[in-house]
Image 1 (cartoon, rainbow, N blue to C red):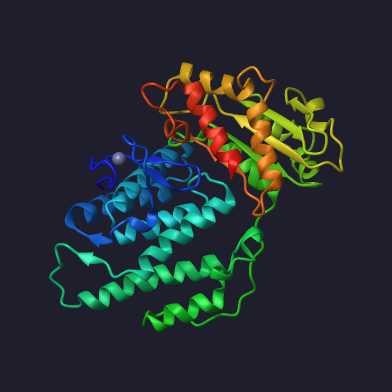
Image 2: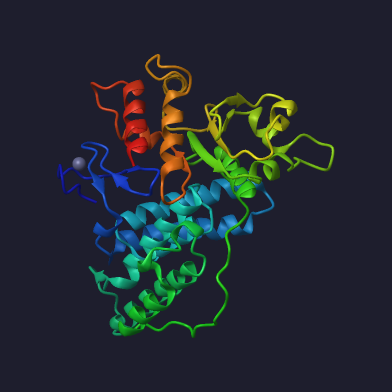
Length: 366
Ligand SMILES: [Zn+2]
């Protein structure tokens, strides 16, 4: 992938919280839509490696460590092949997002999967080294149809916050796909599926902090009225054990912000988990300092410190600004950030603290 801004070859782009890619040299954003869909020997072989790892992961589900390792490799190879434009890899990457193999907020996961599937069904792939089979056109139709099938299934699971977006109408999109001559299964008339519970979703995001690949660095998630109560009641094992939230809070910083009065409390004990106003909505902030990241521990600490003490303006000023932006936003979203989101604003002259502030400014302005 060549950066259209600085012309450098991008080996590994920064991967941002909203699914965008950015050039690590000049920080220009590379839109998913700008990927040229094509099949060549290199991207085809990379995708095959990825699938091999994925199969090995599926076979080793009983061995958690092995499963994580194979799955991590499958995702990395798949990303590489997708960046090179391989259509099958683009579909598979969409699938990884759709099914939560890659940690991201549920609305972001939806949007990313949507863009990957759409890119493949809406474009005619180019075959750099055309395979021997004469059924080239037919195999393209098959590939694009597969993407369209995933796409329509995804639209059936439209998150609440996207319901009003006209562009995402299942029936209209179906018509467009049929008009392109792609073959898709008959409409089964199945009801739209409602998303999973917020409490379980928040726990699954916290769980991804232990991933070996691309573990989140920090994030902020909203829990509506009653949703925090549900979360606080989930036990780690059995009725009388610790709350699941506390088991996470022992391994990383978790701070709860009351959405009504702005007060916050760091979760350290079971009492902290339970000392709540049942009618309040909350924002849960986590910082995964001990996770596996691509930057050093001291840099993580610098970022954490900035998030905690923003230019001496008071505790969690930056986090509170993001929370204000979240509560005023039309589309409800959570934010899950990795080190790449900070690196996006890091230059030689700019410190990690500054880059973190830039990120906060960007997100708070949305
Ligand atoms: Zn560039």
